[in-house]
Image 1: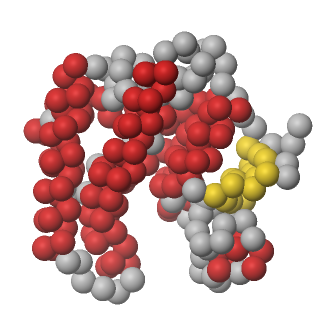
Image 2: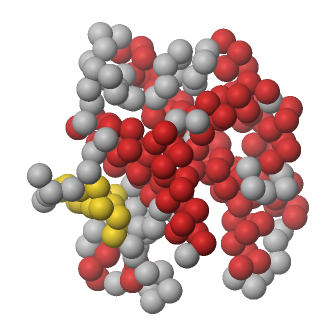
Length: 221
């Protein structure tokens, strides 16, 4: 069976989200880089894969997918085993699967926008020759604190967000957190010991370590 293809560099957080799922299930995959410098992502070949001209795109035989969380769910569903069931599907308890969905939505709609906004202003804007909007960064950090208040309370009751089991809802957080922890604003996590311990748990997973190494290689390259 041919390996699945992931289009886009591991340095992109949305690509890293897909890669960690592939690593968790032990699936064979190939990373196909898309050259943003020559606007390959806006060319007809890539637009046929992802009509928004973004990454990742994902190919499994004749199936082509885009949107990282949808791809992640596909991967975890297709390669699910009794030992690796990060969606909690088929467990006989629909509550667990529903809670994975809830906290994955929270990650996408609450956590990710705040974190990515800070990273974009602090790292990307200067790289493009602009000046970071410190006011906007401050607002985003405050939004992040509001999210972390909720997480701290949740993690007081459970080891992971959806319950006492690791799931996609947890793993989906790591790409943005990896970059955020290198920013001067990372000290915000010092006020949230259970959140910090939860992240340290995630970063200790072999699949996450592997993808972090890929992110570092692609980012430096």
